[in-house]
Amino acid sequence: MPTVPASNQAMPRHEKEIGRPFLASIRQTRARFWTHAAHWRIAIALSAVLCLLVLARTAAAEDQEPPQEPQWEITSSAAAYGHAEVKSDRGSMSMARTGVSLERSGLSLSYALVDHDFEDSDRLPFGNGRDEPWGLLHSVALAYHRLDHIQGIYGWFGGFSLSSGFEQELDNSVSGDVWLGGMLFLSPKWHVGLGAGYGASAVDSQVLPAFFLSYNRSAPEGVSFSLGFPATEVTYRFNQSWAVRMAAVLESGTYRLTDDNPTAPRGYYKTLDVGGRLGLSWTPLPMVETSLGADMLFYREFELFDSNEDRIDKYHLEDALGASAKVILHF
Image 1 (tube, helix red, strand yellow):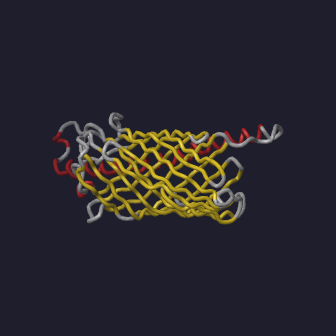
Image 2: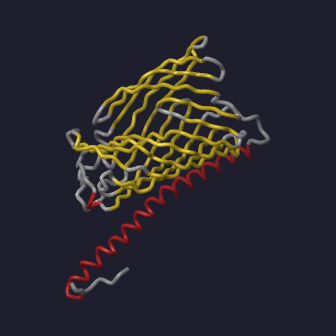
Image 3: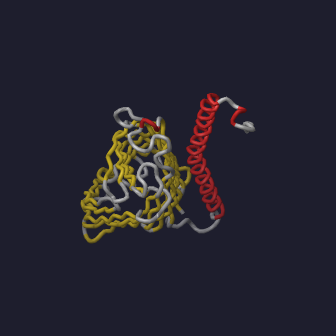
């Protein structure tokens, strides 16, 4: 720890003006590094613990009855994206995201943490030019989805979700959506669905289409895919252990900012990131699936709203490269 001068005269003024910002910059850079690294450490540690639990359960059950169909699914994920400039070359920001979810019979509970790192804050077109525009962003969601056969080739799908996105305060942070549609089971391998969804948050509401065309989704080998909105994925399985995937990345959310936020006090931050992912999956056991991916976000925008829910402005970010990891446990 540096020695503190006994008085203001112990250090010349020009040295204080130069030295203190430099030391503060070092401390901020170190803090940002460990904040981003913490996301990956938390995700890896959680995934390792969950894998050990499943392996122990498997070992204990080897001499017992044959395993039943999985009832629970736990997913741990992490992703990080490099710095991207706000268009018009006005400062930049990077993003790291970690999350965990628990699902049973279509009902899921999830939590996600998003951290942004800002560079050249004084050049950003938002904020006060000194402080970070916002801190850690949290999201908690409860969701339910179901897909069912009715009769013959006909079926239906639907669901809902309730979520809360916030920086610190929870009030006025709830969002929700609901969707419903019909399905045709054209063959054991070909399925098609068409429907619509409605979503609402504190700052807006919208109606969105829901459609997909899927092929060979449960095949242990070969090509399978699901094309549509909001999910698109193409998979090639070499065998039951290894697979390669190409998938669309779609991340969105609305977050209620703090009462004393320097950018929009008691306001909102709404974001949309669209991109693609090329990943490799490994399934060492029937109940454990792991994956690593190389990502690229090629359409990025976000909006800021004031405390009256009126839009302040919309901003666009440059493309960004990133990496992602996921562990899924079935038991």
